Length: 240
Image (cartoon, rainbow, N blue to C red):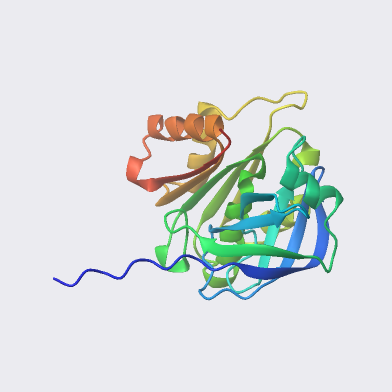
């Protein structure tokens, strides 16, 4: 029996920052010029490596926001004293070169051939890989029904708010529910919110959940309680 060849480690690439755009209160979009040796799929992520003058290195993973075939765009939230996010918030400039490798991930991806309906549920910056899927859908499969349930603290925290509103208004088959947890009537995503989403979308063929551990676990349980089969649900989490 012939043993399969071991998987090749992903190579590091030099990525040039070509634009920086604020997209929410604490989030900036970074458009990068980089050439991978494999195609990008909607939902994948990359690993970044920063190296200090003394040789100290920091690595972080960030989801790709852009649609496959549309370059690489990352959306990075400035989080407290996070050394990498603070660098991108206060130091990084157009023309800087960073080390990057990817694309990474094979289970949390959606392709046009997968069909739908597609339920996307994002908490905070967890919307980023879902945005890649929405952008891909608009180009490659606009007839596939999709609904984004997006939970954030306030309206100022909605990433690419104008884009999402425009898509919901102009793209047939795409629906948007924004759940604000800290406005006057705010509350966390609950059974009522999930029932509302499912009644508007119908039974999903795929459900993608991305956000903090607590958020993803809570929403996954709500979907199961609402009768969504476990095999339909795919999750990606961040945090401890």
